Length: 73
Image (tube, rainbow, N blue to C red; front, side, top):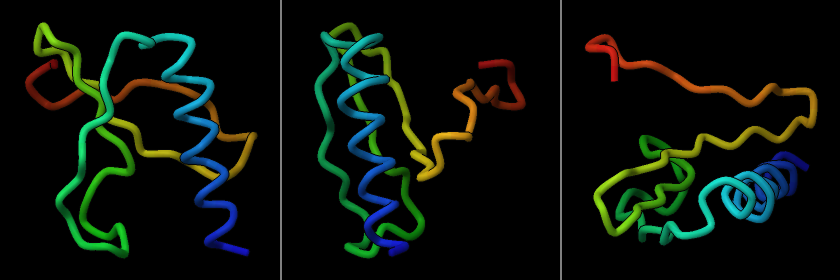
C-alpha cells in the first residue's frame, strides 16, 4: 500500500499542482537511484531557467506550501 500511495501523491502533484500552476514547465529526468531515495520526487524546469521541485506526499491532508532555503531563495 505504501508504494501505491506514493504513486498517488506523485500523480496528484503532476496532474493537479503542476498542471494548474506551471503548465509551461517541462519535467526533468531524474538520475538518482531507482528506489527514489536521496532525490526529489519531481523536478520541473522552465525555458527561462526557473525550477520547481516537488516532494509529493500521499495524504490529501498534507498542505501545499513552499520551502525557503537558508539564503532566502
